[in-house]
Image 1 (tube, helix red, strand yellow):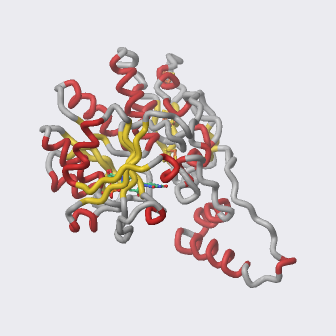
Image 2 (cartoon, protein in one colour):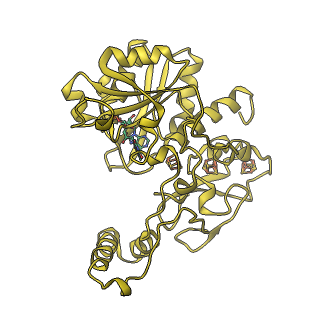
Length: 325
Ligand SMILES: Cc1cc2nc3c(=O)[nH]c(=O)nc-3n(C[C@H](O)[C@H](O)[C@H](O)COP(=O)(O)OP(=O)(O)OC[C@H]3O[C@@H](n4cnc5c(N)ncnc54)[C@H](O)[C@@H]3O)c2cc1C
Ligand code: SF4
Ligand code: SF4
Ligand code: SF4
């Protein structure tokens, strides 16, 4: 995970999107739904009655109380994930020895540790605060008006989109995560990039925010369910958007297995977005397309991580206000 994920503000019920989809871990404690093959956890803003109806058209849905979803089985709705104790060692080995060797070393170490007598085991703790300098492969440090340390940036790329001088490029650091590098010779100090950064907005996390309804949902079609990561909620929402003659934006793999956000006009395009891809996609490349579709009055379903959804909403907001265009 990128460092920003361990201090991210989206681990609460104050959701950036109208709908949040995840895995309903522990559903068997509260329901007779068969958990095999995955059950979707769907959080819907309570003013989105239409979306609840849309889900109900294709899925078996069951309403739940908030504590059924926010508990020790689903920790990411109440606090960020802790960074793995072997994280630093993994990335150090990755840079020197490559992926397979780095994976082997991390797993071998944690496996062998179990065989040491208790007194000889060095205590290693998972941690949340892993802020460090951003270092590029050429050895240069990244310190600019947007980023001072690794936890300042989620890599959403919005700053690079709004810069009127084309001064910002998204570049990979030593760990392989993208950050905005500013070409100071092109920069005119207009500050638009700072205004566009939704990740820097201060927003207090709340785990008791009212106005969210919680559902367990399972798609009626077994084929849809088996090609989805959870219960198939994304497919049901995408079908609804296409039925409205709308468009869907989601994350698919390109030919080189890089996760990329794409625009879908048909269910066969939507199929490419099914399944979780555990690497960061370049969602900002479709923000302009979303804006155009909305301007034409189309229904748009955008699916992405919470920081991508927040970034898109903030981008659309500042574009509407005319900043940075
Ligand atoms: C990186 C990542 C971390 C997750 N962590 C959790 C978690 O901690 N707890 C939890 O309950 N659920 C988590 N999920 C969500 C869960 O794995 C399923 O994606 C979700 O339940 C949707 O499943 P589905 O059956 O409705 O649809 P699917 O058809 O499987 O839909 C997949 C959807 O995810 C989107 N997607 C896939 N990969 C990416 C990506 N790399 N970036 C942005 N969007 C992507 C696609 O656009 C599509 O809309 C995570 C998903 C991802 C991608
Ligand atoms: S919302 Fe973004 S920054 Fe936060 S945990 Fe998810 S991917 Fe990481
Ligand atoms: S301050 Fe303005 S010109 Fe400079 S990088 Fe940011 S947006 Fe671009
Ligand atoms: S706008 Fe996005 S990419 Fe740019 S600094 Fe903020 S979080 Fe990072």
